[in-house]
Every structure is written in C-alpha cells, then in structure tokens.
Length: 392
Picture (cartoon, rainbow, N blue to C red):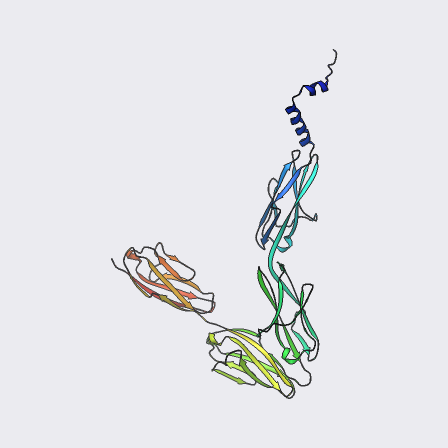
C-alpha cells in the first residue's frame, strides 16, 4: 500500500487566521519560562509580629514549581512557613535576624525566573557599654566609656548623670556615643546612664564611675545606689569617704529637706517609719580642705493599698442599675476583687472591671446585701464594703 504523504504547507494555508494565532500562542506559552511576581514587594513589621508574601505565576508552561529562598541563597529561617502549594511564605513571630530579601523561584520545563520581596523588622534598642563598670579610677586619669546600640529604626543615643538634668557633652562616631573625662575629679564619681531610643521603645544601661585617692581629696561612696523599701519601715543609708584629713560627711535630699524622723551618725543616715513622700534622691557629701565629693542613693517607698467604696450605701428598686466604684491608694499595680458577703457567688449579670468598678444593669430583690472589694498589690491588701438595699 502506498504511504500517504501530507503537504503541511497546504494544511497551514487552509487554516484560518484565528487558528494560526491560537496555535502560535499555544506554542509560545508551551516554550516559555515562568514569569513570577511577589506581593507585597516589601513589608514592615514589629518584632514578634508575622508577615506573609505570596508568589504569583503570571505566565509560562505548566506545571510550574515554586521555591522560596533567602536572597543570599542561605536557608530559610526556622520560623518561616511555606503553604501547601509553595506560593505563600509566612514569617511567624518575626525576629531582627529575619530582616532582608526573600526570593521566589519559579521552575518549569522551559527554564526558571525569580522575584524578590523585602522584609523589614522593627525592634526596640539593645544597648551595650564598654567597659561595663563599675570603673575605679584615680584622680587625674583619663576615662572614656563607649555606648553602642542596635535597633530599627536606628536609635538615638544620649548620656545623662543620675540625679542631674544637665545635658552631658559626648562624642559620637560610627554609631558609638562616648562620654570622656580628660582628667577625672572626685565630683565626677557617680552613676551614668546611656539611653537609646527609637519609636519602638527606650533602653538604658548604667555604669558607675568611682574616683579614688590622690592628694587627700575626699571620695564618697554609698552602700546602695538604689533601694526600694516598704512604707512604715526603718531605712539606713551608709556613706563612706576616703581622704586626708578625714572628710566630714553630711546628708541631704534633692530638692527637699530630709524627713523630720531622721538621724545621722558616723556617715549613716537612718529614716524612721518612712512614707511615700520620703521617696527621692539622697545625697552624701564628703568634705575636707582639699575638696568635696558626692554620692547618691535613690530610694522608692512602696505602700500597701488603702481601699474605699463609692458609694458605701445604696438604696435601689428592682430594675434599677447598681454601680459601685472601688478606689485604692498605694503602689501600683493594684488588683481589685469583688465578692458578696454570705453568698457563694455574685448575682447573675454582674460585671466587674480592672479599675475596680462593679455593675449590675437591672437589679432584682435578691441582689441586695453587702458587697466587699479587696484591693491588693505586691505588698499587701485592703478591703472596703458597700451595703446595697433593694426595696420593692
């Protein structure tokens, strides 16, 4: 049997223009590498938040396999999750190290192409001072302390001295802020704080400078630079000073007189039955003929809560609204708890809030009784009661 020979040119000539165009398009797509894009192209999140990028295939021969990589071909971080079809990349609980470029690669039989996305992670500053301190130096020595911080956005750095509002003169080069003393003096002793701040937060690191010896000038030191005490307790602050002749030690309080219940003996300041008003900065001053030196102690007085109820007596009719407010003075945070005396639980529909309010929108005859509020903090607790009478 004679084999039939096809004239393809005749067949092509017989095809309509639309068919020709369709054939051309099909051939073009079948031989085309994938075209991919990523949305969004960039994202900014705070540390701890999550962000997702989706890789989209615009054209190209199917099937198209999708892969995600870091732009520098490093492996994806352990908190990166990829969706079932490979198109969705999610960075969960973002960390500063997750910042950078991520690349989606599309692969088919005709080739490959890629598209990139950028993740920015904002976080509060992290601060480091060098040397960390405490620094013990001799009078007249040159001293410098560097402060360096990381954070996004880039944090601003500043130095301040504890107990002073004066702006310190510093030197900043290559993201390092340096505080310098060409020749330290006794009065330079103290606690210095480097502060780093951006719109995500503020972080501080402290370093203590202790100036010692030299020509008999006094150098004062305190046993504690910071203390937190409980209201009503007795507090002692000890100050020692070197120098020749032996310095005279006195105590004062910043911007206020010393509490009237105080004694000073041998450099030890004793405060009896302290109250919240006694919080503040206490200054030890050591003086002799060669000069003077100061040391500082910051004291905070915490107090247990004192609770009251407003109002403490209420007369209502069934259907009225009951509103009680528990107020408390004392060191924060303060927690409020409501109960009804003589009853196992609160009436149905009772609402309470963190700031000490109690609300019953529509009281019933059985909602009468004595309601007790307990205010508590880390030191102690206090209670107050309100008597509620419901009359038909």
